Image (cartoon, rainbow, N blue to C red):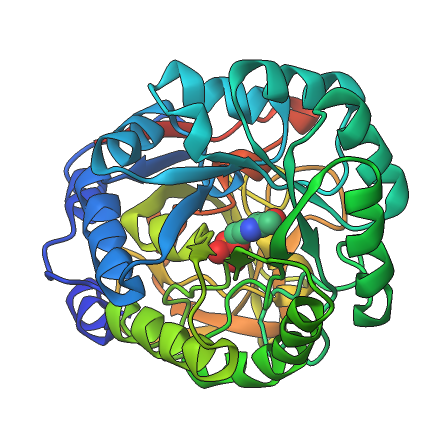
Length: 390
Ligand SMILES: *Cc1c(COP(=O)(O)O)cnc(C)c1O
């Protein structure tokens, strides 16, 4: 668990210099703070774009909505996947071109659709007739892509069930889209977040490709294939580097779909996770009994203040401490709040140095995605996660 060793396994990095880590060890913090390196997000963007070739990146804003990151991506030419009026406004405030913003949530407010339409957003997601009715009413004539449910996700954080329609519903939905005066512009899906290997996409692509071809044969001039997110970050298990991963995904897509007029990808985690780490502090180390093998380590950050993705122990963060390299023992890791669900890792304990004490700084690695955006406003009085963008 020493910082240098971890950085070398972290294959995604284009360079080993870790600006956020450097900042964390050279500064002190009076509350949990996510430190994100904008330069590092830029490196990830460039690597993903190089691998994706002519596919367009629409950054999934929810992964990390820091305005400085949005602005840097605007300057690099990125598009954006926004899920709400607030996210659209954020992108606009940082100079994004509305033509490069897709309204990708399948569950939208009518007034928000009207707002998006009025400022020039032209692409909307839908997965059922009622949502198409809303779009037809508030954004007449808009381009719509239909979100599909995909099975067999091999992701560490699957996004199945809640979004998308079954493939069997697609033909009638495309007809319906036309019948209400909208443009059936394309299809979208999401393989699931943190899909660690490019080949894990294959079963999902095998489900969607026949639907694409059938829709074209039925006379729909589909232009857009939106392959969503799923691009991984290093969370302990090996992942492919972003450029090679993205290139392999695009090759697998083209093999099954042929030439696609507009190919779009919506990386969130893969763009920002590795660019940020959280500076946290140990509040308490205790044993529940004299003979207990495992210590309980309580941090000043937990499930409600940024580490929501520890739910089900799905995402396993890496911890760096000032005592790394010394003997370790198993620990249950928990947050500070008075809620018994605020336990981060218990089924699979984390090995931490025996010397760890309250007051020690702990760096939680690769937390740039889905931490600040999941942090509560201050449950139990613990402050929301502070964000510092370098
Ligand atoms: C959350 C989300 C993404 C980003 O997913 P990652 O796995 O973080 O890359 C992309 N598209 C849609 C529609 C999403 O909801």
